[in-house]
Image: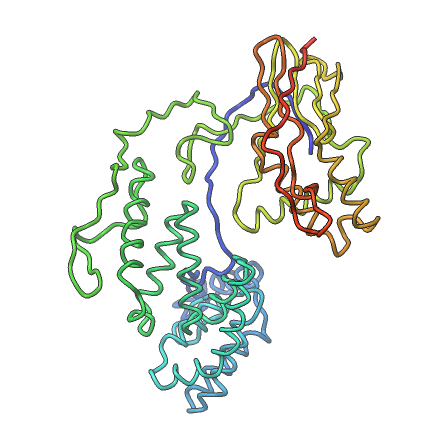
Length: 440
């Protein structure tokens, strides 16, 4: 982790979003250029295009045969064998392309297996559900216990056509909705509504949330053409007909601030899920100072572990430990205490060692658990402690009146909680110490 002071440069535009690995309801379909050429020139051109596609698109003949065997077995009436081949495809960790024989289209192998399962008659699908339901329930139970988005997406990918797959897909859609990824949420809920056997499981509440997500997709980007639009002002809710939901307060471009190309804000602009010109400008570093110089490598390792957990859970990696600039001085809280640098050169002017610091917490953990460090069986304590530290806005923030720097010290963190003789935690103190440090 480093602190960078730079000169503002050219502003750029980004598109914030997410593309999960288990999106099975949107698959690429390309025509086979080698199909039925009309002339010799067309045949040569088609051969070149086919060769180029085969080089660009990831294909595996062994895995393609799984699909062909499944189709042959289902066509010959060997339902159980065909279902086993299809499930082997869904259990693969990665997807690939395959030429679909019926219409010579290049399609996703996983989406083709999902389509074949969706086209099964009721009796065959019931047999499939009996075959895989125990494994699906076990994996879903593990996902619920760990609250792990990756496991929920795995259930969705491998067992979408089962009741656990329905529940996992609804969980993913709700989570995407809560995180502002409304288009993904709509696709997930619509995949359940359009499924011939899941349709009856869709509740009124799920339809209401899907309807609201559609409106948020439309209104979150008023200047662009929406991907999803409603056909009418009415919608089918639980067997009845209801009017289109209105968001309160209304999300319209008139009620939002006007976008300015020169409006610079921290970590993006007001439109956090769409393209925006109000992004963090590019910085030209004038000097760079490391937070971890001279400290244990365990701190860097723990920070990387924590950031990995944040990314996996779609949580922010931003912390409250932001620097402030006062009278030509850059003051920030590092892993030992509070540090003051010269704004122009980055030279250290002074530092104050706090009673509560990240380095101090690591020393306490090492004394308690030994020298195994973050890779030991106690590594969860390190990651949890670091999360408490970075997630505590009271400890991280600094303020100033132009003459002094104000900061909080003596916070009680989870790794340093007091214990009585009986091993039970005692009540922590209800107050902390306010520091006032001179700037000069």
